[in-house]
Amino acid sequence: MSTFIDRTEAGRKLAASLAQYAGRDDVIVLGLPRGGVLVAAEVAEALHAPLDTFTVRKLGVPWNRELAVGAIATGDVQVLDRDIMAQLGITMQDMQRVIESEEVELARRDALFRGGRGELDLKGKVVIVADDGLATGSTMVAAVNAIRKLGAARIIAAVPVASDSACDLLQHRADECICVEVPSPFYGVGFWYDDFHDVSDDEVLATLAAHPPTQRTA
Image (cartoon, rainbow, N blue to C red; front, side):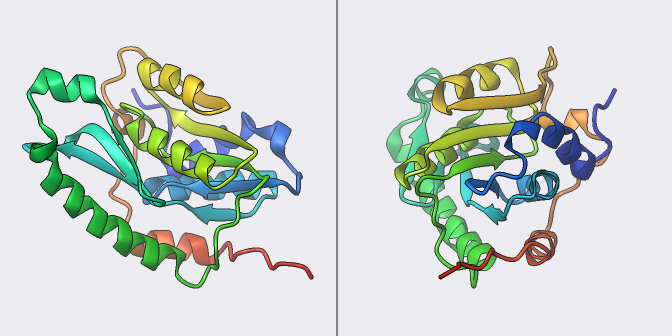
C-alpha cells in the first residue's frame, strides 16, 4: 500500500503543497542528502527556485544505527534525544564513537556535494528544507537548528511523508512544517514508496549538476 512511486513523484506532490512560494527571489530549496536531494530537485524545479544541499547525519544507537537518537549537521550542530537515551540506558560515552564516525562522514559528504558550489548564503532567505520522509524527525531538527544559525529569515521543513510525532515535533522547531501524508500506523518512510532504493553519491552529484548555483549579480 504505497503512496509514492519514487522520490521524483513524491517531490512533485510535495511541490504542489508549496505553490505559495513559487517565483519568489528570496526562496532557496535545500535537500538533505542523499534521498532528500532528489525530492528537493523536483520542488526547486516547480517553484523556479535555486537548489542546494545541506549535510546532516543521523546518530543511531551503538548497536542499531538505524534507530536514531539524534543527528549532527554542518555548523557543529548536535541534537540528542536525552529521553530515549535514558530509556535505553545509553550514555554520552556510549555515543561518542558513533558521533566521531558520523562527523567523518558528514565532512566527506559536505566536501563532495558542496565542493565548487561556493559559500551557502542563507541570510534573510526563506529556506525550504526537503527530505524524503521523517521517522523520528531528529535529522530535520538538526538541519533546522543549523540553518537558523546561518541567519535564515524563515524555515519550512517539507517532506512527502512523516510520522505524526515527527510532524508535530517539526511544527514547533521550524517556522512551518509541510507533510503531504501523515499515515497511521507509520511503519517507516520506505514503506510508503514503491521505489525506495539507496541513493548513491553519483545520483546526488548528477542531480546537483543539473541545478548549478545561481550566479551572484554585481
